[in-house]
Amino acid sequence: MSVLVYTENWDGKFKKLSFELVSYATEVAKMLNTSVSAVSIGNVAWEELKKLGNYGASRIISIQSGHLATLDNQAYTSVIAEVSQKENATVLIFPNNNTGKAIAPRLSVKLKAGIGSGVSRLPLYTHPFTVYKRTYSGNAFAHLVINSDIRILTLAQNSFGITETPNNCVIENLSSAFDNSTGKTVLREGQKQSGKILLTDADIVVSGGRGMKSPDNWPALVELASFLGAATACTRPVSDEGWRPHEEHAGQTGKIIAPNLYIAVGISGATQHLAGISSSKCIVAINTDSNAPIFEAAQYGIVGDAMKVLPKLVAAVKEIKK
Image 1 (cartoon, helix red, strand yellow):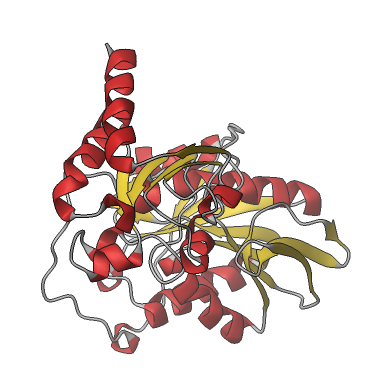
Image 2 (cartoon, helix red, strand yellow; image 1 turned 180 degrees about the vertical axis):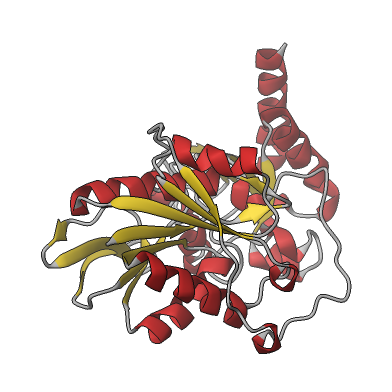
């Protein structure tokens, strides 16, 4: 019996998300009095794999195959199911991002496993296995009981934190029996974003809404983000109008994020937007309407015109950064 955690890599490197998943898996394993096995798919160097041991993984299973270079939901599901059965895993943990949402449901069917999606805390009980998750766009919570022998959890990003638990891990290179004819995805051309903080990875996000009034007013917001080392985001109407690229759209219908600090500039706080950013640790809102819904979710608020507040905020940050 073990806890199996899927660790995603980007160009052969692990990010904070993977270390958070292993930290979470380690605490779940302690509750079950078992160990953690981490599975990595892709070309990852031995030194990088070893880092997973710093957060509690006792075994790292590395699968390197040219046929798995591109994420294919069906292929990855087959491989992880194979590893799960070899490890006799009773709990499988994935990130609650696009990758996890694509693989976990397929794996749930394949392994006849119950699934708890978007959990944000350790299980409340192990008998019966009960997990905590937010629901109704973050306005309520639920205690979900999973009665199956195998349980699959997807962890909400930035909800648990990173805990170093040094461990002398063992790295095993596994040759999967995966049949490459099963894969359906073929990558013909790829374009990678560079020189910009990814929205889903950012600890700080500066976001703008229609209160910015025009795409010509965005430089001040981008400047603030630059000084803070933050990613930039926007609401759906802004991206639909073409003021900002769709990749910056944060919200229930865009990217669901959970930064430590979210600065909402000229955003009223529509339900769909709040659902996508409600897991932020701290929300600072700037809006002319003191009754805007965003202020109900914010820890700090400034009632004022964004065009007047932003320059002063940028100047204040510049002063601090001197």
